[in-house]
Image 1: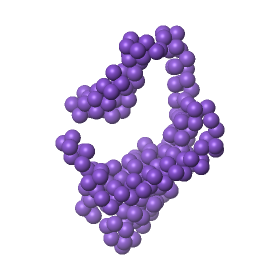
Image 2: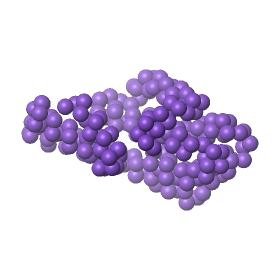
Image 3: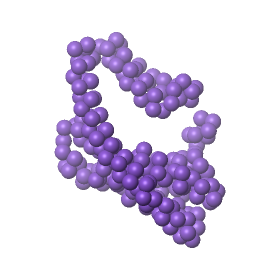
Image 4: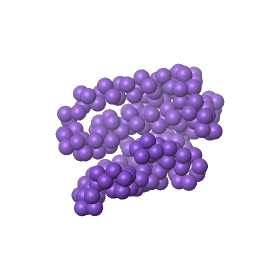
Length: 209
């Protein structure tokens, strides 16, 4: 039953039954079904504590995302992202150099913005840049997504790290030395995707995208 979860999630998205966001809801309900009805490791009395803990963690995330949204709105309103895009476009570093510069800039941006805000602010600015250099849009999207994933574990924001520490019941400061290795491996993987695009494209191409 556990192995059927990826099949249900990926198959449902591939068939167009639900979006990736809705797939998270489907995964939760599937997990509850398996826990309650199949393996019976979850009792009905456990649901209140489960929902209470989920609400507490979600509240922390919503507060962080709300503050990040205010910051993102300020950046967008003041036009602070436009000079960054202009600097990258006029850097004259060529395709690979521009991509590496862009990756470094967005890596810093990801330390202060959540993933949704980063996408909403920078994709409209960077998509024309990607098309101008002739980059594969799917490949470029994978690189941006990996960059956002790195940012979600990089202080001071570190939304994913905050959630993980909350679930584990450990202070976030104690995990920093270990997270640095994770971030370093993420960066190496992202650089591998930059210099060898088939690493990112084989799965989307296999799924027909």
